Image (cartoon, rainbow, N blue to C red; front, side, top):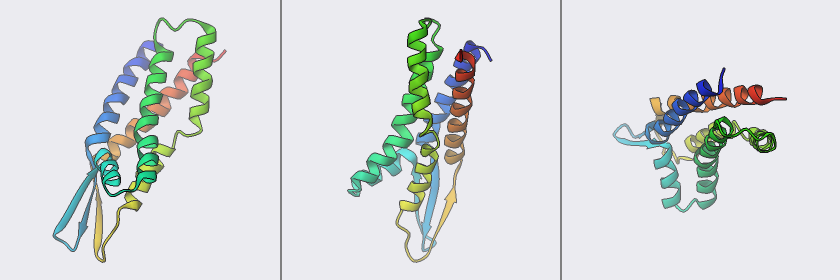
Length: 153
C-alpha cells in the first residue's frame, strides 16, 4: 500500500472511531422495563459522575486518548513532508512502544461492560457502536502494520 492509500484508510478509521465513541454500544435492561443505553463516551461520563475516578481515567485513557494519539502519530508518519529519516525512526519507535498497548482499548470496552452494576434481573444487548469501534481498532492496527512495513529499513 502507498502512503496516500494509508492516509485515506486512516481517515476512514478516524471516522469509524468517532462513530464508535458516540454510538450506543449496549443497552442494559433491568427488570424488563428499565433500560439504560451506553456509548463509550456516555459510559465514561457515567463513571466520572459515579465517582469512579480511577476507572474513569483508565477507560478514558485507553479507549479514547490512546487511540486518538495513535491516529495523530500515524498521520504524522504518513505526512508527505515527514522525510527526515531520524524523525521517522523516532516516530516508528514511539509507535513500537505504543503497540504493546494496542489491544487494551478493546479490553477497556469489556471492562466498561463488566463495570456496570447489574441488578437482580438484567440482560445486556450489544449494539452496532461496539462493532464500529472494534472495526476502527482493527483498521488502525492494520494501518499501523502497513506503515511499519512501508518505512522499515
